[in-house]
Amino acid sequence: MIERLVITLLILAGLSLLWLGWRAYKAKVAQSIQPADNAAGVPTLLYFSADYCAPCKLQQTPIVDNLSAKLGERVVIKKYDVTEHPDLAGRYKVLTLPATIVLDGRGQVTHMNYGVASQAKLEAQLALPSLETAISRPPVAVEFQT
Image (cartoon, rainbow, N blue to C red; front, side, top):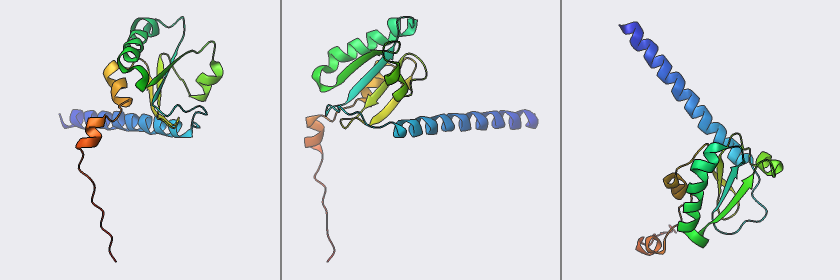
């Protein structure tokens, strides 16, 4: 009985290390990508797909279209076919399709999603601070010691 518990704990520890390694790899890849030259000053969503990708057509494209309709001009959404733009897919380290890359207003990669990303997840990654949030925050007091 104790052997099974130890084996289960070892498997869970191994899976946890794999997950942490994957997250660290994605963060390192995101940092290695040079910022976009044409930063729009607002968050940007890069959506990579292809004609042969069924999840792209059936799942991710409707989500991205809904997001575009909902957020309007507050974000820039660019769609790319990897067969027509292989250099761009290579630059952003697209490993699988669909893939969505979120850029901040300066063009720096903030999030990389491999596979279908839900609308809620993309909205959270593209989160824009609202005016109400900025106004409702109390001012920060700074004191200097002389």
